[in-house]
Image (cartoon, rainbow, N blue to C red; front, side):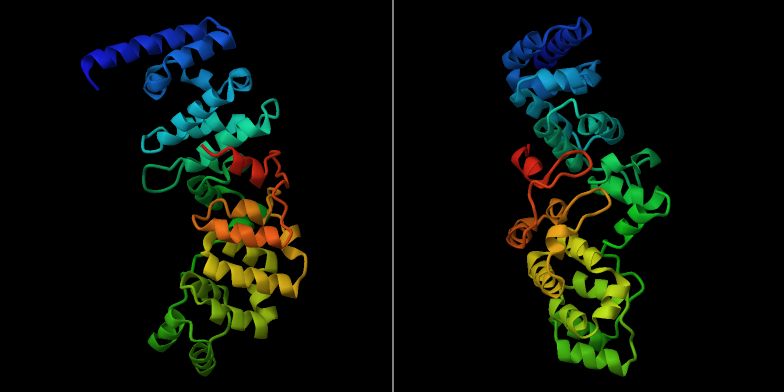
Length: 311
């Protein structure tokens, strides 16, 4: 950015700060946004009163296009060291019932896109419910949150296969998803079905091996994780070619479970595919099995609302 451009941006940022501090009307703020549309993100970076961008009265009153610009600003800054301040600014908006669900859904989308820029975990403050859909905050929750249903749910829907190291022959069978070779080797070696074994199968896309164990040893598979936990696991973490056959198998065994499953925050399986980069095909399957796109979670948000208000 040239010196002249930088000076012009700083001048505009000062103008916006004055509008905020003088309690200017929504019409005046919108006029400023409209006049400076091309430079809004640069201006937002320079203002002192950045917290005004998330004031509930301003978010509720602004035209939706400018609310989206504010959300895009927060979303696009994920590479900076401002993760903590941005997350803390976005959380109260998502929680506020004074603001329409459509607008809060935009801020939810911004929040989920933020990334912790360092190694390790974010601060303990992010081990709270409102941040649970942000992947880095979710890891923070699993580390810092007290033992209980929510903590257990996160642990029981992750794909952590530490502790299972298959022999070379078993590993080749898993890599090629050869059920007969896998099962023969497992039984000859006396390997009991364990959660680490099952997760290892999912991580390596050995869906036929997983389905074999599910069909022939369902009590052992469901002792490792409940049917609902397996559904949430595959919806959050697995590609469609792995997830869909398992979803169908569990639904066939337990009709209605796909439509009725809820996580501790009131989210259904559709919502839990939003963190899956390959979730669209899984979503189609869940919809066909009766999963409700309008089912609301504890914040009054639904799968459909956040999908329709992407940034």
